[in-house]
Amino acid sequence: MRGALTAWLSRPLASFHLILAVFGLLTALGLIMVLSASSVESYSKEGSSYSVFVKQLAYTVVGLVLFWLILRMPLRIIRRMTLVFMGISVLLLILVLVPGVGAKINGAQSWFKIGPVSFQPVEPAKIALALWGGHVLATKRALLHQWRHILVPVMPAALLMFALLMLQPDLGSTVTLIIIVLALLWFAGAPMRLFGVLALGAATGFGVLAVTAGYRLDRLTSFFDPENASGDSVYQASQALYALADGGLFGVGLGQGSAKWRYLPNVHNDFIFAVIGEELGMVGCLLVLTLFGLLAYSGLRIAMRNTDPWIRLVSATFTVWLVAQAAINMGYVVGLLPVTGLQLPLISSGGTSQVMTMVVFGLLANFARHEPEAVAALRSLGPGRVGRLLRLPAPEPYRPPTRRRTARAGVPPKPAGRPAVHRGSAVHQMDDRRRTRRNPAAADARRRGNWRQSQDYR
Image (cartoon, rainbow, N blue to C red; front, side, top):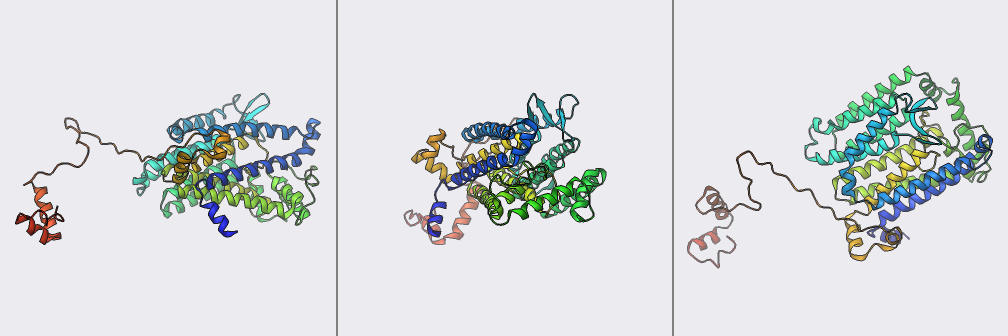
């Protein structure tokens, strides 16, 4: 079995198939658990047990269409549009704060609402920051040993987005953006001193934010002292632990859990992992952990096997973002972290988050098809079964960018190729002395006119 697994992983399209498998399993599991976790709340509010599930299914269909379009799109076009994506994302984050334009839901001015459809601009902003930041750092990779080049303009743009998010306020999305920025800097090779400074600044900022907002301080208090804490945060954390304890090893059965009967708030959203533990038991929780472990492996494998610096940087950043967000969500459900309100990717209920996470998986799958071995196989052997089914074009091989030479005013540009060296010039004499030291016998043969014996000299 080990040999068969090694042989399968050595295939050119193994990364692509791994990403598709993880994507499909997480999406299917998420739809099943949203249907189970939201049935009671949907019936009590809408009179139907399927209202939340139908909305989630509709967003999933939209996400699948975008996944397919992103999978077909040439990466050079995506990279060329990164600055446009970033500008639009920042503009949307500003507009959502305008009264009458943005809508306030659950105490945060972070939504655009058009009829029954709501849209959260921070979700595409996360993707835009990763794509644009990766493009900037990959372009300046020869200068990243200097702090000003590794910080500017990525950090000013990130700080602007942090400020706009805290005006909403949305601490959970701010944490996600911090993860994206740290991953970009880490995989770009930033010095460790920089991470120490950023960690100190982030800790100071979170401390100030926790003190200035009562509900954030309650979350920290309930985490460090749950026995003496009170409020919704400690109630949610306690009910989540009760649900996990009821599940045991194999769970009480799909759809048979009791936490969704108004015992656990946001059960189909932030705390859906507790429902998985209750209804599917420890086996279901281990399945989720395994899937995100496979995502971490396949995403970092894509980054390691690509030659394009931008693809390497962005794919590793996307992988760290999704896996870290999943770890934070599962961490606060089981009581290891304070409650932050981050969703479990592809499993929690959420429209914009579901669609944008599918876009990220589409980008990762596109990156997987651009591994050098995958490009060679797809261009020589054809698209394969999956490629024919999805009608995917052949990927383009990576071509390093050509270096541009800037000519001074009045000075004609130098011709391409190696410049000619004239006999008797200083350069020719220097080369002659160097070759004489390297092979004195051949040099002596050349001086005597025996050119056949002086071929090494030439």
